Image (cartoon, rainbow, N blue to C red; front, side, top):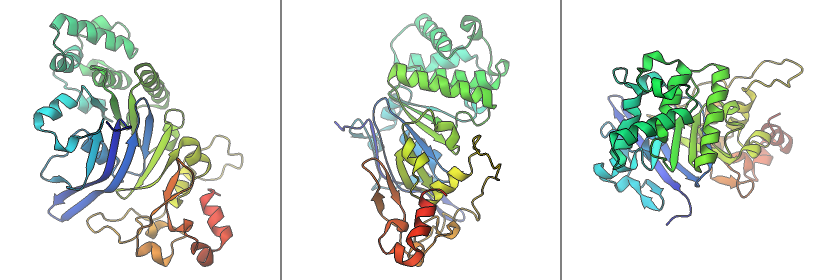
Length: 343
């Protein structure tokens, strides 16, 4: 058995469209241990959600295609070899997903209690009454008041925050070992966002559940995750512990993301910085570094060849040519220091 609960190795996912093959995920590798929270961050279109859907076997083929040299190991077993029956047993029982829009995740024509009970009855040999009691317990666990009454209500009778709690309850129905939260706070106001993040943290600790948090907002994951993986143009560009990413970013893209996060301690009230340009077209992905066209420190080799990962510490690595010894001769030591220290 693998020492990691989840081990994604060289994941490549493409979508075949009328315009050509979109290489949405290009060689992503990621490891998650039991009870650990990993945040996957990056702009829209960076491949975060496609990666998470591949873990749950939700890539429709066609038009989607997971390349043959990809591997996703769950407790040491390559789940990409699963039959459809094995996928059905895996989803909900071993791994579950919280989608970003609770209104489209829930069936508007079914009472929430029935939707929670569906997964419980599918994966457990128990009576409907026992499943109902479990559903009430789950609603109580996610802090929904009067769960006995709420069980018989429809999704439209819940607020946005309450609907998201119902979605979390469904994900928790069978005590999965892995929970993927895809932008779980996007449609919620700031106060409710904080409540949902606190709830997820409590659930993670109580159940020893591994969590993959998918988001574009670094500020959201600061108090939730232990590790952060930064994705850009379908690739991982940097990964490390939260404090390493926040206080010592080693890739220009990570540095630019951090500069775009509002800082309440900023005394000079300077404007938030934007990242100029647009992400590359993944129908024709760049030959070199995906961020090269938007990077102010781009060198000739950045456009010609993808950089290998440089290990900054045992847990921190970044894929950037600035770490190559020859970079100092091109840009100068001081320029490299400034961009990597987020100044």
